[in-house]
Image (tube, rainbow, N blue to C red; front, side, top):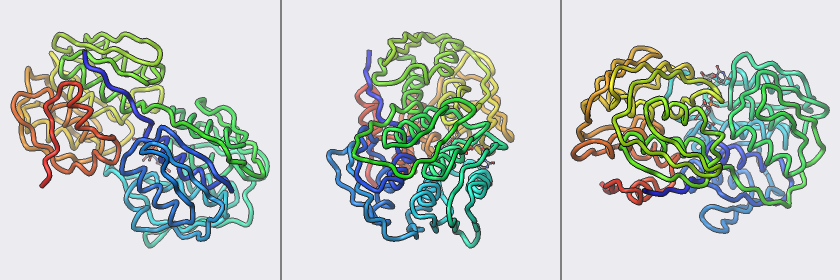
Length: 407
Ligand code: UD1
């Protein structure tokens, strides 16, 4: 049986790092994944005036006492999606921010109207145009904000902006992902007053100041844990996944059991094994606690190898089936149209040159390559490096024959 230890959550880390801007002081963040999105987040903080000291590759001490500009570097913020958290944090801290439009995976239209609506309801003026977002406020005042759609990013961003606002903010129809709870826990550790994170309704009682002077450890990555769980099933392996919060993985556990795998739950670790060919299953991606869209491509690999025909309905992103064309090059039989894909399971995949089209698609291709006969060459690794620390070594340690070939 192979063993893998799960790192801190990327999507929590890239929100907690900008959240440190709300502290006029010093704090330490531990269990940060050592990935490019985290490194860029730290670079952005430095450009705004924060002093960053690395304690080791997964722990950083941040001094935000000298934030001297309200212009975020466009070249860096355009590199990933979560750079939009600079807006909520800087609105809270300095009441002003100019930032480039966020980049990130091309998964279809990624509007930010709910973020803007939230900031405006707190009293900010927001101008979006010419590739930048400019937000400013005389002061932020708490309000009742109903989210028209369930958005992870907008929920966190409004929470950030409301932390130092006057009075109480209520976010209704809030997203409930584990990293939302983690950001709220971080802010509360630093002196904020946030209740209800992880439910539909979050209440933020504005405080005057965050005190800092504390250490916070990032929650284990739900998506990384799910990636390894699904790798175990696709390769018909036996894997102990350590340092995870198994409750966050219920929707994945349920699907693995449905396709014939075995999951043993030890609270902070999981054993996943699958000794026979998985059977078909249908998936619909949904906001938490539903099946996460960020594990849809990895599940797609399992279903491409399943006995029978499966359907995946992607309800969050318009263009999240680009990876299916790559899997088809490896012998999969997948027909994708719009937000639906039909997986006619095949007995085996065969190695081929394939292109990682986005972060989670890249992870899916590694799983497919590990499960396939022959050699798979995966290109565009920069997508994968945005979200997985040391991915090839960790797959190698659990039995995959994988190496990074420098070109
Ligand atoms: C976050 C995750 C991403 C994940 C996604 C859904 C981070 C850094 N990224 O992205 O990995 O795939 O959640 O779990 O945490 N929408 C609007 N208007 C808005 C905001 C969103 O219409 O203002 C729509 C989006 O187009 C999408 C849906 O809402 O269809 C959900 O998006 P959202 O939860 O905001 O995703 P992100 O926070 O960008």
